[in-house]
Length: 127
Image (cartoon, rainbow, N blue to C red; front, side, top):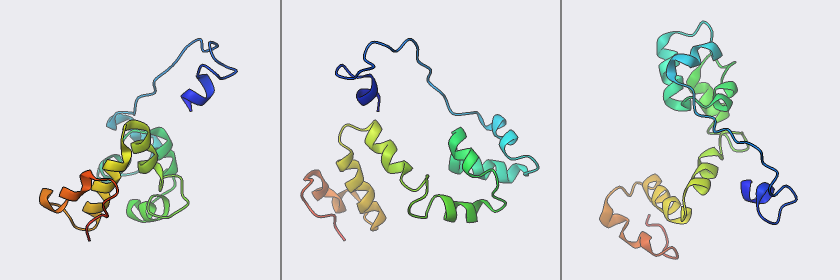
């Protein structure tokens, strides 16, 4: 998005006057998103969602954290379902290599020798 909106060929090129990097919230700050929740619920929620406000907002009305994960993370078409893929694509130079490794792990291939063929992107994932 940054390249498309602020890149050299963009109409907005050279018009940025400032920039903020929003950091995730610390654990002690998330209680405000979940009033009345016990400490165990907050620890589990932070373990799953981290301190990303958009993720926390998705779970504000969830009483059962694990049912919320099934509804809001593991269901196709939801905001959080594609988020891991989007983050990997944004952060990594060669996301295809990492996706191949993750796919192999998802198929139960956890040893290096089981994943040895993954260096060739055209090689099928074992399993």
